[in-house]
Image 1 (tube, rainbow, N blue to C red):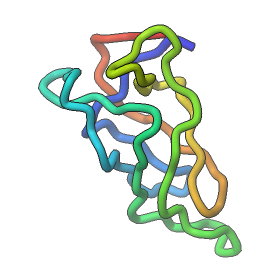
Image 2: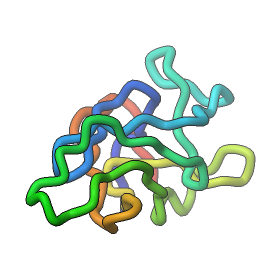
Image 3: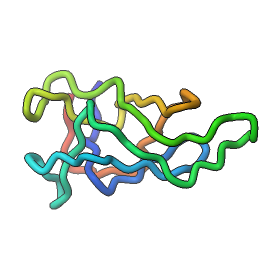
Image 4: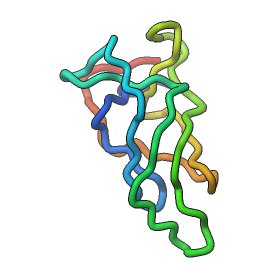
Length: 105
């Protein structure tokens, strides 16, 4: 699915309000001076509230869907329509604010 590419510094949150950050940015492709993010690279989640309390806190996340036609080093990039799963709870990440100049499929 097409969408705006996700760059390092984009606002990406877990469904409980925790801030997600890419651990390994891709400096080969930059957007507004910020590196892009690749599908297989891990993300870390900070500040997850885990609401309701019986839900485990989101600690890490792994993206499972990325671009299909645009790659960097042969790996898919991340777009706003990409999907991720947080561990250990299995909830999604939500790209909230990204750059708005470059789209990809």
